Length: 206
Image (cartoon, rainbow, N blue to C red; front, side):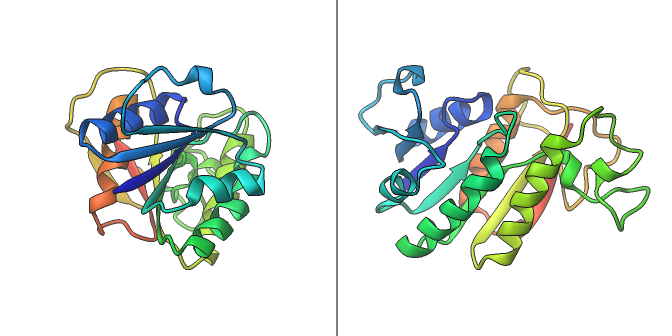
């Protein structure tokens, strides 16, 4: 299987790269700065490019089976600007499956289920900018024909891999307050072989 990982040098993305290589998959990462890729592996292909560049995205998608995006907001509009390019390239290549890392802010509020968590009193964030970016990505994926899953972790410390956590479609598991980077990466990576949360957001927490 050929897996394209976007955001492969970030905290969650780099962990997903490690898991995929350990399982013997062929992994391609598209990165602006190849020097940031710490791994050297026979099954790892590093392509230099920007997710905001249509040609770079198209080149990276060639012959892929699944796409995993662990891109962050970069403090700007990278997420919402890159997703239309990603969706278009996937459609062109005939790739259906995409797994992305979102935020618990775009899950439904338990207090007011008609709105999202970041719009409700459940959110402790002082700024909603990042959540708004993730919501734009969610809306773009909903409008597509792709088999998408958005993994939505709450507070994300480094921590260790425990392999024991709770997940729930569209909501954050009740009382959930944190989930480690390795466990978030493990769950997201595991969605490659799962159809449980296709075309769904999924909250994850301990």
